[in-house]
Image (cartoon, rainbow, N blue to C red; front, side, top):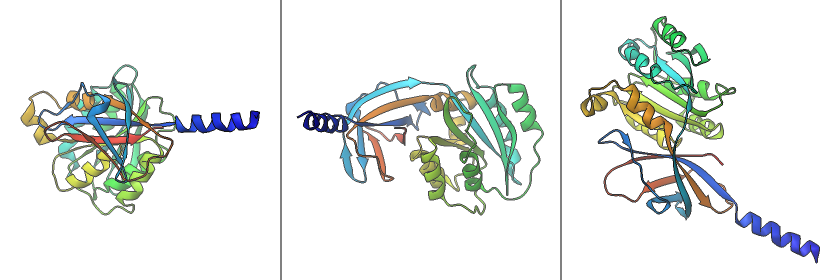
Length: 264
């Protein structure tokens, strides 16, 4: 009798299991986070199978950022933006800087010192082709071992991709496995679809510098960090793990940029 009761209790607990998603929702017209959403506003499809959203909680949380700085032949044009990003670092947050072209080099490990970060950016040298995917893969692969806050890779790029050895699928799988969100700040739209795909499938965001300047005259650092720190935490019912073909949408009029990362 006790054995039967135990089996029933275990089955009940398994049925109550849930998955949690970190979801970012941004209005491209304003460049701002969409707030005030409830569980019923979200639609979640797992390989075309609907999953019920039990709860949706909005929060603004500190982040640990690994800034990937484009130091290819044309990378110098985005260097000034790095300083505006560094300036937004909060009291509890840290940043590391990786310079990349045909290789990726850690030029400043995680620190809260804005002076050290700016010094690292000022000392970079430029050359060769930008291998963006290789750089992201290298950053995600063990780069956050000592991170204490939510993990974010922020790629500052002119918008071009060279000839990386790894492909987009490999980068996505590693980022999901390590719980790393990938966001991109870019100038040219040559690789826009790739940047958006990486962001959508890892809970990240994309920022076109030209679009940001049309929206506001303020430096881009603040609106970018406002988005990176803001999350909805969705609780999905059921004990089935989420597959790779995850699609999250918001049932609101207008075109919104929605991205998601499985965290539990």
